[in-house]
Length: 162
Image 1: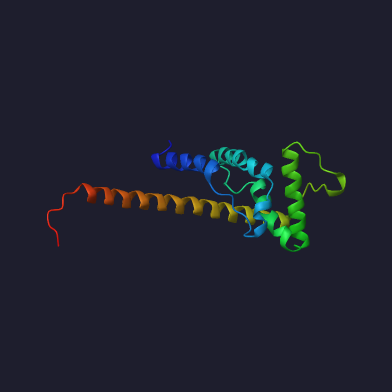
Image 2 (image 1 turned 90 degrees about the vertical axis):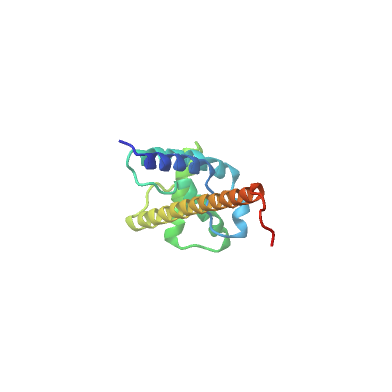
């Protein structure tokens, strides 16, 4: 049986899939992230919501991890393992978008340590995204409460002036 709190979380996750910010490496290169990648984020997040509903632990998606890494790769060289992870993600995302991957840069697998690193990155991105949503929700509630106090103050007749 699904509780009201689980329903609220499910609804919040669905709305978040569409509206949560995209977490990226902080860099001036963030502006250069391709729009076709950003456009793919909501659908990938919705798919992750469905997988989470079936019991899978939710994480950031492959496209979110790729977007996070994109500005970092433009700043300075990254190590061999992270290069392999980046190429692997690029291959997966491009394949999902129906694009052909040249044979010389095709990367279909990662070793165990690289997969652990990728999974840790995706979990961290997901946590940051959820934290950003919760902080936004708190700020919205605080703002509504302040507006309500101000409205009541305006409606309340002033009985005593000091």
